[in-house]
Length: 191
Image (cartoon, rainbow, N blue to C red; front, side):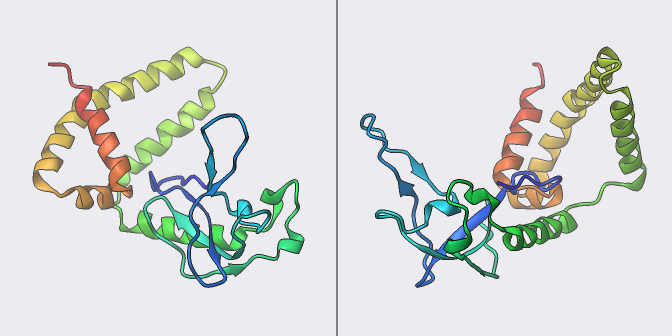
């Protein structure tokens, strides 16, 4: 799984396609320990072993539903049996990174002065680091207070004026991640 720096909720991974171009369902592996049979979707489970489907190609996929248009062949002879994650999946990862860049570009930019302030706060927290954790907590607490007060108000105004999709796009996030964030902001308000 690839975690984005900015595009919240846009978690990426390698997806696979069978020779006929279809996307296989999860692989179920009976561990022999009861009625529960776990399923897996990691690309290396589609190796054709036993009764598993044999993936022919790989591509990038994202939790938001986006799928990369470029596919890459899988050379199963070169996939390390005990360490399949060592196989080169850089092509799909680059495609997913391009997708998250496009999500970031579509997001509402922060005002320059605010972006500089946030950057400076991050730098300062990094400087303080392990040397003074109590001061770091104090800074984070002050930021939390701002979120408590302003997050609730901004959430309520934004949800009255904009659709879920518009808000998610403006934040550079998926609708699901945005909904969780807005619930968190709104639930912090004490009545």
